[in-house]
Image (cartoon, rainbow, N blue to C red):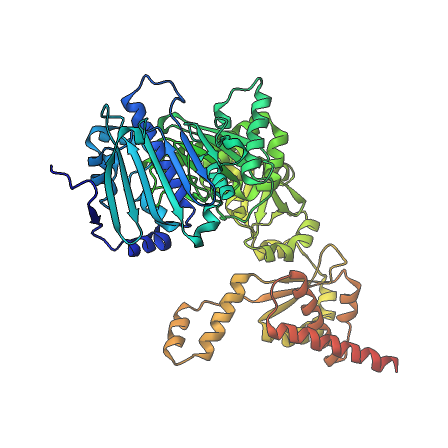
Length: 611
């Protein structure tokens, strides 16, 4: 191979400005990644140097950063580049020295797998200066490469004295509009952000203070350190979680997957979060921060934790800001999920206080897991809180007093019947919340002596006592007027006795019944058209709502004795409206109008009577 003259100008065979624009708008999330790319290239160069010199003591090679407001410089003691390497790798877009034949078999040891990292520097600078000397060739000369934003570059050989030791120095001259990312304080902060867990020593200097270098990563990751006691280790991990995420964890779960070289912690959130809201996790690859928003590292149900992990074998995407979805990532996700299940199991077995605090905050997350995980179901279903006619309690407590457990299909239905069912001695669980109905129906798997059934309106009304025949006959005229007044709502009216006596009426009306009546009404309105035929084919006998008046209530006893037809109709409408309000379901416009009209009519009647 004949190399070009040392000082010859050459041009990239791409539109470099267009490529940099593509990087900034579609590949990288922010110009700040330029420093991560420089650190990454330096780390990979050090890794290659250790491959060449495996006997070198740990920490003998490092990375030095310098920024003074006019330049940003990153220097490493890595494997370096020959002039041939420079022409092959720095002047050819998409190539990478980490794909070189001599180290291809170790490419898994490198963070980067794509040869475009250096181009990210054009996000903040118009010129990149690289000075390198190869450690592979004894007495190798130094080589200088200058790349410019217009797409041109120059290469020249320099005496070995221009760089006495092997390694590479990359120097950027920032553009005026890049000051936000190249100020000394920002460069130091970015170095800490991306490189705090790097295994090679990294230092920073801004040229002040006598030129002293400040360690960027002075300590190993907290899970790599030794502690005098398990308690001290637990407190240190919790403190690190609070430093990273900004909250004091309810608990920390150590994560260790030797097969992929993954270590880290999961921090249990101290406050509840909406179901399905996935938090980003902080993922490092070989010590370099890859992403702070890596949702894909855990399954969806694990939204009660935030993780910080460092892994050896996870594969980054081209932007190196997220993880590549492959079989390895899928296996890691399942293994981490198993670690979280094991933590829940340990808490259930040995730390009831911690489990109680966890379930108080994250019961919804655990319920979502228990629906699909039989082991968690058997372990935690007795501990999970539910809304019942006995108040908020666990199913285990509820089943001790109710051998037959009834479950509603909606919150609305539970609120309609809770007081009456409780007074009748029925055990009803609110199944309207996410996962609750599914879990209650699985209670017999844990307690075979308990029967579970959906609450049917007929079940409730069967527990309401009928009135005697004489009372029924005396109220017949009122009941007929009430049925006529409420026919517009497809509502029947009945007279019963039930507790509590303070409840004047109970409206029994399921959401499914209302939907069926609405569909039937639409079919009638569309009769004769194509939609009428479709709805008619779906139509079933629409179940009617039922307003059950309580004969034990003094107001009802007064109402059924009214002999003035208009006042009787108004009182029936008012009782219906009050029962609809107590059900807490959304009111239809006609019902809202009825409530207002009946109130005003009753008020007018009272005023006329007083006058």
